[in-house]
Length: 321
Ligand SMILES: N[C@H](CCC[C@H](N)C(=O)O)C(=O)O
Image (cartoon, protein in one colour):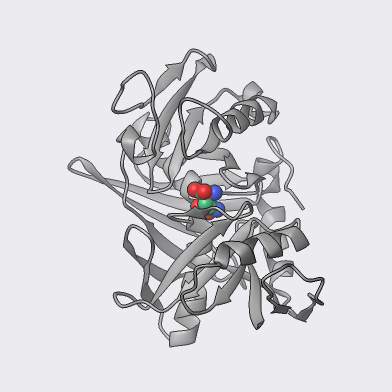
């Protein structure tokens, strides 16, 4: 079956995106596309919805389906808003219908969208995570890992383990890689894996590097950056409100507001279109031609944005090409 795909990114977290009908084999499409393209982190599927303008499903490189994707939702938001000719919309996701909106550009020529990140739960059963019969894990050392890293577990609603780490640990990915690989393999804590983020204060904001469940290290993980901003506000590293979150793929703004004992989270950042492709999708992977028949030039502008903030980003991490 011939399908049209867009290649898009949010903070250089890159996806193929397809506008299709409900089917039960999109994991197979994700595996085929990711086998062909090492530079992509997963597949976004846009589907009809009974409750919203559209529905988003997201599949990781390993074919596993996630309940949410913050960077991907910005790209889906742009596609749906431009298709419907609106600046605001609602997108159905696995656990919630989320508000999305077109925003002032981060920089000229960089389409920018905000997306709601919800629901939020600190209950370990919602990740899921098993740890010493605890029901929550917030700003706590896990002695097996380190005495100097404060960890927090939160579902937004996909699962995140957030560690506030000193600069010297952040400077090299080895420590994070060791534990993220353990928690996404055979282990007693996370039966369904977990996205692992290391967070360090930088300037007025934070720097976040994430090892994503089902993918590995990515340039950015939208739900992880938002969860990291939430934990950074709760631990008084930064004030509540708008948090500048730097990552190897650029920078986003996360807005963290507390009302009573609930949190409202918003993720604002680029939604960049890279190219458009035709793909012959067969049951078995065929070596069909997989060329871009349209290369867009939005990336040039995004590179200028990266240059502007590289001094902050490059002290911790080089971007994955
Ligand atoms: N790897 C994540 C899904 C993708 C989320 C990430 N790309 C984002 O922007 O939030 C998980 O399995 O929970």
